[in-house]
Image (cartoon, rainbow, N blue to C red):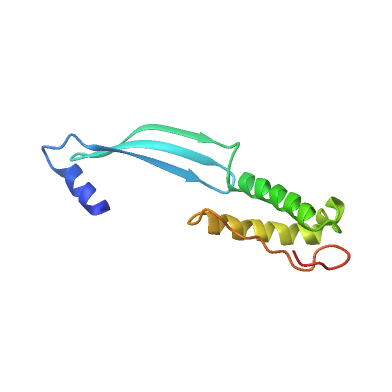
Length: 121
């Protein structure tokens, strides 16, 4: 489909097509609107933000996983979940969830050997 759109954009009778590109990088995001026609590609608008990136989504997922873990397993406290070792496990789980959510509406999060009692969630 992409090639068909490119070829239609290059047709002399076509005024061109407008496309939007959203990129969420690790620490920044940007959005561009471009027009593609027979003379080439022209950037119509571009806006970026250093205030939101993938790491911000990771933090939201980490907070959500922490809350769900505390609700599911009453034996674990928030302090146990905030140790460095457990935070690394939760961040890895959040990254896995984020990758699954790019193509699915739901994603499971699994944590193994969490807390002083080494509980699996």
